[in-house]
Image (cartoon, rainbow, N blue to C red; front, top):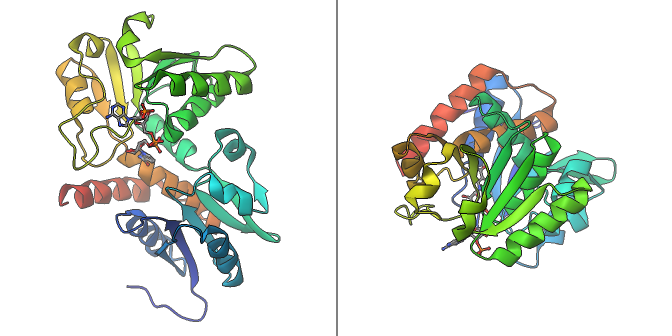
Amino acid sequence: MREIDGHTRTCGLIGNPVAHTQSPLIQNHMAQATGVNLVYVPFPVAQGNLEAAVKGALALDLLGLNVTVPYKSDVMSYLAEIDPLAERIGAVNTLVRCEGGYKGYNTDMPGLYRAMQQDGVEIAGRNVVILGAGGVARAVAVMLLEKGAAGAYILNRTVDKARAVAEEVNGIAGRSFAQAYALSDYGQIPGEKWLVIQATSVGMHPHVDCAVMEEPAFYRHVETGYDLIFNPGVTRFMKLTEAAGGRAYNGARMLVYQGVIAYELWTGVTIGQDTADELCRMMAQALAVR
Ligand code: NAP
């Protein structure tokens, strides 16, 4: 345990609930590894207290905050500045002290991109299938656009939500980039082999025996299945992907890299590959014992 003294800076996580978070493990390990005098703690923020929490953080001179469910969009109303990427995504998960308040960033999507690069999964020039049309799926579609994907096929249980996300992303693109389908319409997706990003909450602990898509005919097309769920470490979607001969990844590396990028924004210290790899191993261990 590091010494806490008069110079110790504080960062933390605001959300509701926050008790399940892995972020203190990730952030405090980085502070230790880089010798920065910083502690990171969870702050549960009750409904209706978000503005007071941001003002309180400013008054207490907190160096930075992560923001989680359900405040990633609402927090944008209480910030001095918003990074353009976060603005396009419509969600902020990291606050960094700036002149007169906090500047909001989205490190989830740069985190996912870095994770995919580390895993050797290329996006540029590819048509990518997204399962889901919630907040994260929308952010993934924006990330795919930013990173030069050829297009996105958004499949969702509620097809109207998929249509709304596709329309929004096409509005940002200024062209037809994303198309929306019902889950059962996967047969309309062109191409033989697909990169599929699983961005629904189906299969998350404790409902580990579920996948949003069960059809064997779907999985025959999945070359790479990238599940954003990190608990369990091997989801049913990943098992079905691998059973059909595809490569499968979970969301743990994304979780680590969103934290790495936030830490780098707060401290200006770059996290080396060794530390990032160690964090991924720690996450795998922490999740395995749950
Ligand atoms: P969300 O806004 O609540 O969206 C949930 C999505 O799951 C919707 O598309 C919803 O479809 C679908 N869904 C839920 N239950 C379903 C069911 N029984 N059958 C079919 N579809 C169902 O959630 P979110 O904020 O986008 O988060 C999605 C997931 O991303 C989270 O659960 C988490 O695992 C993952 N995540 C990972 C990281 C990371 O760092 N790795 C970070 C953030 C989130 P409908 O629209 O039809 O309801």
